[in-house]
Length: 321
Ligand code: AVJ
Image 1 (tube, protein in one colour):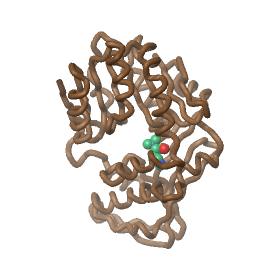
Image 2: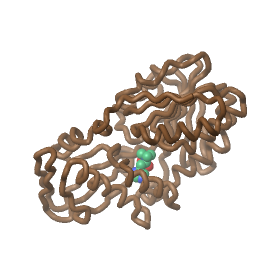
Image 3: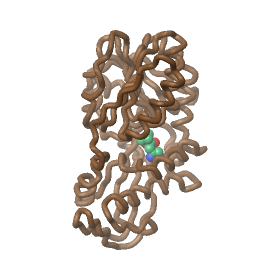
Image 4: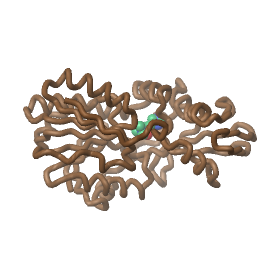
């Protein structure tokens, strides 16, 4: 059985107009990374996930493949809530283990795209007989309260892929506090985080040789052109990605190659870029286990277990209230 609850009205999907008006009038221009993921951007992201330099996706999948059974045995999970689910290829590893353990009852995918949720739900109810799918269409920064109350069984809330790294430290803890509130005693948070490592390895992952990440980064300008009737020239910007060792995060920016005016007609705005001026488009925080534990603790969560790969590139953690 499938239900889909919709917290986003059409058009409001990604609050782009507000974020552009706000972000491009700041003294240091910036746009939040959630606007990367239109149809084209999601395709580019899928390509990034398959790049030789981009280790997080395949490493997380390898950890899940090796440990899903173990995770399920430790949690006895009847229900999997997945934030930013997209197409649930990784969640299948968990759902398989839950089915095999005989505990699987419900899957709650949470995503901004209603289309993606309906498609995923359709396939999953076919593949897992008896599975209840309760989709939530929403923005997990604003609509966590739309997660349905848990049944009797244990619930695992999964936030995979390292997307937690997109939050700045303060809002990261605030977000985790919100998640903590939707966990009861036996429930667990399953969190995927990219780990601090050799800066050369990190920087290569965001400066791939095929230029897919560069295209992904610039695509946010194409999103503005289409959605807000803007006239960004994608060739007038270059992709920049570097590791900030102090902050322990990757920063992606777009650097203007010449001074220019960009007209954003839907907002009645003209934005000036100076020569080499940079627009910040993403931060992607990298974690040490110590800092992860501290972030969780500050948010009312206890780090119970860290699962990692042999090279300690990526971590999957289990935490509880
Ligand atoms: C989806 C946020 C985890 O930060 O590595 C990939 C997005 N940006 N390449 C990341 C991304 C550039 C990705 N997350």
